[in-house]
Image (tube, rainbow, N blue to C red; front, side, top):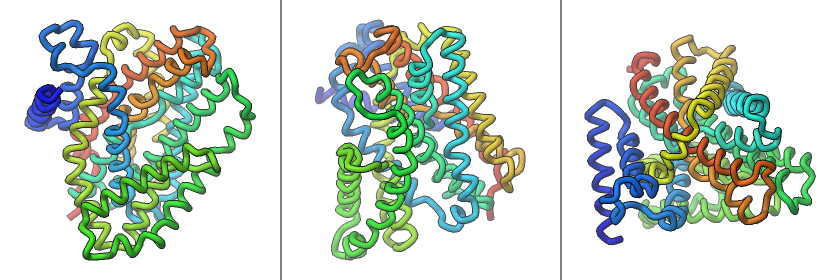
Length: 411
């Protein structure tokens, strides 16, 4: 173990550098390294067995992936522009809901009519696949802001503001489907559905109001910025526990990002310090996160999906792309800029790696009933893996190669 981890991450670092030399995002090298050292590959390439991750190690990596998600959300909030949100708020709201619902509907319909799944199981699969990846999109949008690309029309901010709500909608839809499949569920479906708007409101309000009690902590010069970062990560964990307590509808994802935005709005100097600190931490967290995401993908399951899995994913992405375009229909963006937003909304990774296997594990634990049994759970896991393998590289490469061709660089 002491030798394995340094070797894997040294390989990931080198693979990332090679990707950058090829004008590709470094995260592709990190994911490829994770795939190489995944349990499925090690069974085929026996020399790698001693160095590869075990299933228990991947399961126990949850806290690392959670911390990486916290960092992504804080960076997204600290990178938001209040003027841009005021200008594009309505468009950002449409961009949060329309693409996700369009993709979920397309996958649900295809799964039901073409593959013969029940409506509720089709919807469960759809909401897992429909979420986009903040781990891919947020750092790339922040880089565009830094390089002043697309900032004239606030395009990076527009996408940053939309991504988290898109994920919340997908995760909530997934939760509704799980509750409806639950053997012992006593919750009314309508009560679960109306949870979403209340969770959005309380998440935003909670995150915004936190700035008052924590202002003195953030502004005290004797507290080093590293301690402030540690405090913010602990706060994020507390917010997550509040959501999981089910005391009231609440979204910790939105609360974290809103608090980052509140810091930017009220404490400009401290926001710059924290943004720089989180950026430095992300250089390490990014490697860890994408290596783990790559290692969690089973390429054998992806191969088993074949043509039907590819058609399902293509239909979903096509519906999402139409949803993005319709959301931007009355905006100030030109055709090239709209096409860039379509590309930016393709990547999937974080949510699929996190919740892709939940349905199968709940089925084995006797918590939910799947009418096609374990076979349905295995299909969901395989489709989640396929969506990561195809869309994360496709979206990341698309954003990297198209941003200067489709967006305007500001002087």
